[in-house]
Amino acid sequence: MENKLYVYNSKTGKKELFEPINPGHVGMYVCGPTVYNEVHLGNVRTFVSFDIIYRYLKYLGYKVRYVRNITDVGHLTESGEDKVLKRAKLEQLEPMELVQKYTNMFHEMMSIFNTLNPDIEPRATGHLIEQMEMVQEILDNGYAYEQNGSVYFDTLKFNKDYKSYGKLSGRKIDELFTETRDNLKNQDEKRHASDFAIWMKASDEHIMKWNSPWSVGFPGWHLECSVMSTKYLGETFDIHGGGNDLKFPHHENEIAQNIGARGVEPVKYWLHSNMLLMNGRKMSKSDGNTISPYELFTGNSEHVSKGYSPMAVRFFMLQSHYRSTLDLTDQAMQAAEKGYKKLMDAAQVVENMQYPGNNNNTTDIDEKILTILSAMENDMNDDFNTPKALADTFELVNYINKLKDGHLNFKEISIDTFNKIKDTFLKFIYEVFGFRKETAGEDNAMFEGMIELLISIRNEARANKDWATSDLIRDKLKELGIQLKDGKDGTGWSKI
Ligand code: AMP
Ligand code: ZN
Image 1: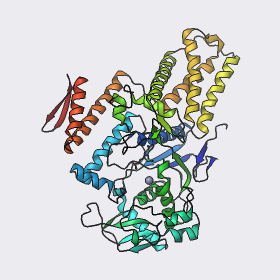
Image 2: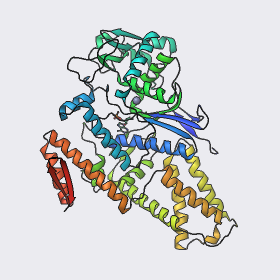
Image 3: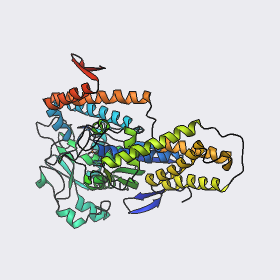
């Protein structure tokens, strides 16, 4: 592929040559979390996948603007309740207090997994005016209608004019127009089952609501991403990402809204990552087939035999392609832990290794090594194929270990090749794959972060009068030598 990046575009179902709209610059938007509860490992997989994509684009020298939002309003449950509001009531917190709490926890988790921060992290509630403006634009263009203070997107009219509704998700239009998809109480207000709300009139007891020309209400969930992506990246931008469960209705509706408002396709390349499974089944909280990141770190779960470090989990995630499902099993985690250690041991060796002398004669071993080095880039250029790139990296690990053990003489490779191994290998490990040395000092920062997180979870359990969980956390920490102390100003901790 000769250093040309190809990406799989979900919209066309093809791998396409990546050519950004403005040469040298990339605008990338990824749907962020809905901050109403603890981030789960499935969410982490998606954000790690896009972290790798962000990192590799930077590695290629692009100036990337990465926007990842925080959803803090409008994401409804099956029964039509706002997820944030429902949880805020349960925890007896102000909605924004709840949002802040889980945003903080999300950030901590992202930093534990060593993902890079987005360049802009906009919140839905911070963009109400822009969302109302887009509702008005869609109304003005005739692709929405008002009904009792709510505003609905007219999918039938839109499809008549643009013939593209359902294209991203591959849905059949006829089915869509009879399916009831929106979790709305007021289905009968819609002209067609496939229409969706872009503004919703709020009931009296609803707390998060704003004045608008149509009613005191709140925006539909899909609207925030249409608005915030184009506000920060332009009417058309390069990459839009998210988990593949968001293709429909979320992303399909985003496209319809943007075209309905501005008449242009917003996104050049749609990238979707696949789901995390556990023991072969989709990870899901409702049927108990789930493990939280902390349970995985501590080993405090029936699904694993021991704890695994965050970087071993990251390694595990990179071992599969972002478009494939990833199955978490104890066995796979054990293998990932070993692989990660072997890789980082080699990194340590290569960092300290000096080439003796100044030999610049090349041999066929040089040739082989240079082929591996270019294969690493070719793999990443082939729609970010991390499992293949990792496998190639391990071929370098073999050469590095042979040099260390004296099974390969330095004279058999040139100084240039040696420097190239050192440079590319270390860049891939730290910059592209985003691994971090889990040294004592850094372990400490992560350790402290994790204790703080466990304290937050325990506080939440206490607020919910879930004494069993609260006691379990306190007792297990005590067994591990950590004493929690509850005081007026919150909970502190010390090593016993
Ligand atoms: P949410 O907080 O539910 O809005 O989801 C945040 C992101 O996590 C979205 O991009 C989802 O597609 C993604 N996601 C949710 N569940 C999973 C899962 N089991 N595996 C991978 N990604 C997921
Ligand atoms: Zn979104």
